[in-house]
Length: 423
Image (tube, rainbow, N blue to C red; front, side, top):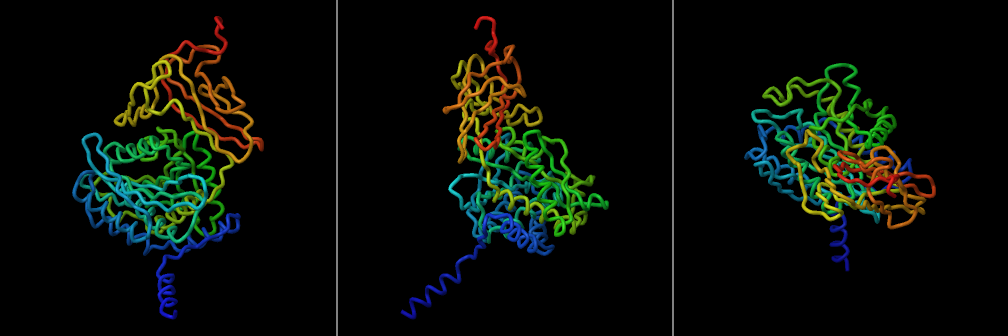
């Protein structure tokens, strides 16, 4: 019996420890405060220095592959579920590295924290984006000892500098799997400051639909300002980063970068001696706090467009074939849906409350609503046919007044409109 008890004692002592905390505001604040206190220069720059040791990590190169192995092994040491996500696109073959910390709720919500580990040929990518990868790895190490309501995925993408191909293939496949990605927090160039204002400011690049993430980030920065001394400045979106692929496939995503300009990006001069260590640590603290708070946020209502599918061509309601547009990231056409003739939109709504109604819009104009499931609508204009490029937008309202929104880009050719003279 004593031997058995000793074995059990050794077993439990060897198990990884996890900090559980209440979902109350005070419980979350205490836990996040504890996490922030663990971010330090040694932790962050051990990861950064290790990544720099592989040299220039151009996508498809041996150095890039070796860096991927290193990141995979670090995630594995943390006890996280981890895998390589191989991709082939645009003449490149490489691997994303994906680690997951499973959530505790019955839902399937996912929060992604990401950065890219590749860089341009001949560059060390110290800031672009070794700084982001170091922030992700340091955050993952600390957060791996805690539990969260939603699943957190830590992803190191390759292929960013050659066309954001790694994030594009991942976002496309995530959409095809039906992953419920709540928010994507992408860190790209978060290690530099050379002015007083820059040392206290981090930018977040937002779209209209992701202003809620920016506002959430501002609130988190204000909440932990005494501990971090870093504020958030929302600015208009920039397409050329890894968050954009998720936007193209209907997910809410933003990317964060330092405030001050960085003249050495994508050049051999992007070296570790240009990194501001104090700022890098502060940025890591704030990004960790945003991800941790987001992973415990309660979402009262969610709405998702289920039909038509992103990136498909439809003829009179029937899907013909998918179009990726992966090489057209700069045009805003990646993930766009083409509709010829009549088609029906349908949505799913997730809420603990009764649903009052779902509103269907073309661009920002109310066209119709549905008060009972299944929530469906014939896609059409209000007063004129919606010919050309538009946004299909849906809003869901529950009985407590909570609102959720989803949207998708469509290129539509139909004569249908609500107040047609022949109706």
